[in-house]
Image (cartoon, rainbow, N blue to C red):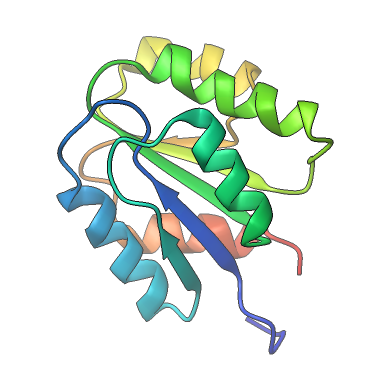
Length: 133
Protein backbone atom coordinates (compact mmCIF):
# COMPACT_ATOMS: atom_id res chain seq x y z
CA UNK A 1 0.00 0.00 0.00
CA UNK A 2 1.31 3.39 -0.92
CA UNK A 3 -0.41 5.23 1.91
CA UNK A 4 0.73 5.13 5.52
CA UNK A 5 -2.93 4.92 6.52
CA UNK A 6 -4.06 1.34 7.04
CA UNK A 7 -7.16 -0.20 5.52
CA UNK A 8 -9.67 -0.93 8.30
CA UNK A 9 -11.74 -4.10 7.87
CA UNK A 10 -14.69 -5.28 9.92
CA UNK A 11 -15.00 -9.07 9.77
CA UNK A 12 -18.49 -10.17 10.77
CA UNK A 13 -20.45 -13.40 11.15
CA UNK A 14 -24.12 -12.52 10.57
CA UNK A 15 -26.96 -14.74 11.65
CA UNK A 16 -27.06 -17.86 13.74
CA UNK A 17 -24.02 -19.46 12.15
CA UNK A 18 -21.80 -20.91 14.88
CA UNK A 19 -18.63 -21.61 12.93
CA UNK A 20 -15.96 -18.94 12.56
CA UNK A 21 -12.71 -20.74 11.70
CA UNK A 22 -12.77 -19.46 8.12
CA UNK A 23 -13.53 -15.90 9.20
CA UNK A 24 -10.64 -16.00 11.68
CA UNK A 25 -8.26 -17.32 9.01
CA UNK A 26 -9.26 -14.51 6.65
CA UNK A 27 -8.96 -11.96 9.48
CA UNK A 28 -5.43 -13.15 10.25
CA UNK A 29 -4.44 -12.97 6.55
CA UNK A 30 -5.74 -9.40 6.31
CA UNK A 31 -3.87 -8.46 9.49
CA UNK A 32 -0.70 -10.10 8.14
CA UNK A 33 -1.12 -7.98 4.99
CA UNK A 34 -0.99 -4.82 7.12
CA UNK A 35 -4.68 -4.10 7.54
CA UNK A 36 -6.40 -3.22 10.79
CA UNK A 37 -9.01 -5.89 11.49
CA UNK A 38 -11.97 -5.68 13.83
CA UNK A 39 -13.64 -9.05 14.38
CA UNK A 40 -17.19 -8.80 15.74
CA UNK A 41 -17.61 -12.42 16.77
CA UNK A 42 -20.46 -14.82 16.15
CA UNK A 43 -24.20 -14.28 15.77
CA UNK A 44 -24.23 -10.64 14.69
CA UNK A 45 -27.40 -8.99 13.45
CA UNK A 46 -27.24 -6.73 10.39
CA UNK A 47 -27.93 -3.81 12.74
CA UNK A 48 -24.96 -4.75 14.95
CA UNK A 49 -22.69 -5.08 11.92
CA UNK A 50 -23.64 -1.68 10.49
CA UNK A 51 -23.37 0.01 13.89
CA UNK A 52 -19.90 -1.46 14.43
CA UNK A 53 -18.77 -0.53 10.91
CA UNK A 54 -19.81 3.08 11.40
CA UNK A 55 -18.42 3.43 14.92
CA UNK A 56 -15.12 1.82 13.91
CA UNK A 57 -14.89 3.95 10.73
CA UNK A 58 -14.00 0.96 8.56
CA UNK A 59 -13.23 0.90 4.85
CA UNK A 60 -14.45 -2.67 4.35
CA UNK A 61 -17.08 -5.00 5.77
CA UNK A 62 -16.32 -8.67 5.19
CA UNK A 63 -19.18 -10.98 6.08
CA UNK A 64 -18.83 -14.74 6.32
CA UNK A 65 -21.84 -17.01 6.37
CA UNK A 66 -22.32 -20.76 6.27
CA UNK A 67 -25.95 -21.03 7.38
CA UNK A 68 -27.65 -20.28 4.07
CA UNK A 69 -29.20 -17.01 5.27
CA UNK A 70 -27.02 -14.85 3.00
CA UNK A 71 -29.90 -13.89 0.68
CA UNK A 72 -31.68 -12.22 3.61
CA UNK A 73 -28.81 -10.97 5.78
CA UNK A 74 -26.34 -9.57 3.22
CA UNK A 75 -28.93 -7.33 1.46
CA UNK A 76 -30.24 -6.21 4.88
CA UNK A 77 -26.75 -4.92 5.76
CA UNK A 78 -26.70 -3.00 2.47
CA UNK A 79 -30.16 -1.53 3.16
CA UNK A 80 -29.08 -0.37 6.62
CA UNK A 81 -25.87 1.20 5.29
CA UNK A 82 -27.91 3.07 2.68
CA UNK A 83 -30.40 4.21 5.33
CA UNK A 84 -27.48 5.60 7.35
CA UNK A 85 -26.18 7.42 4.26
CA UNK A 86 -23.04 5.28 4.14
CA UNK A 87 -21.82 4.64 0.60
CA UNK A 88 -18.06 4.55 1.05
CA UNK A 89 -17.64 1.11 2.62
CA UNK A 90 -16.67 -1.81 0.39
CA UNK A 91 -18.83 -4.80 1.35
CA UNK A 92 -17.69 -8.32 0.50
CA UNK A 93 -19.02 -11.72 1.44
CA UNK A 94 -17.79 -15.23 1.75
CA UNK A 95 -18.64 -18.67 2.98
CA UNK A 96 -20.93 -21.34 1.61
CA UNK A 97 -22.82 -19.37 -1.02
CA UNK A 98 -24.18 -21.08 -4.15
CA UNK A 99 -22.95 -19.51 -7.41
CA UNK A 100 -26.59 -19.07 -8.46
CA UNK A 101 -27.09 -16.65 -5.54
CA UNK A 102 -24.08 -14.43 -6.33
CA UNK A 103 -25.69 -12.22 -9.03
CA UNK A 104 -28.56 -11.20 -6.71
CA UNK A 105 -26.08 -10.43 -3.91
CA UNK A 106 -24.04 -8.26 -6.26
CA UNK A 107 -27.24 -6.51 -7.39
CA UNK A 108 -27.91 -5.78 -3.71
CA UNK A 109 -24.51 -4.07 -3.45
CA UNK A 110 -22.15 -6.81 -2.29
CA UNK A 111 -18.98 -6.01 -4.25
CA UNK A 112 -17.57 -9.54 -4.39
CA UNK A 113 -18.28 -13.00 -3.03
CA UNK A 114 -15.47 -15.40 -2.14
CA UNK A 115 -16.20 -19.10 -1.84
CA UNK A 116 -14.41 -21.90 -0.04
CA UNK A 117 -10.89 -22.47 -1.27
CA UNK A 118 -10.35 -18.91 -2.45
CA UNK A 119 -6.64 -18.14 -1.98
CA UNK A 120 -6.19 -15.66 0.87
CA UNK A 121 -3.94 -13.57 -1.39
CA UNK A 122 -6.91 -13.11 -3.75
CA UNK A 123 -9.03 -11.63 -0.96
CA UNK A 124 -6.19 -9.37 0.21
CA UNK A 125 -5.51 -8.27 -3.36
CA UNK A 126 -9.17 -7.55 -4.05
CA UNK A 127 -9.43 -5.32 -0.98
CA UNK A 128 -6.17 -3.51 -1.71
CA UNK A 129 -7.26 -2.91 -5.31
CA UNK A 130 -10.74 -1.66 -4.45
CA UNK A 131 -10.29 0.48 -1.33
CA UNK A 132 -9.29 4.07 -1.91
CA UNK A 133 -7.78 5.61 1.22
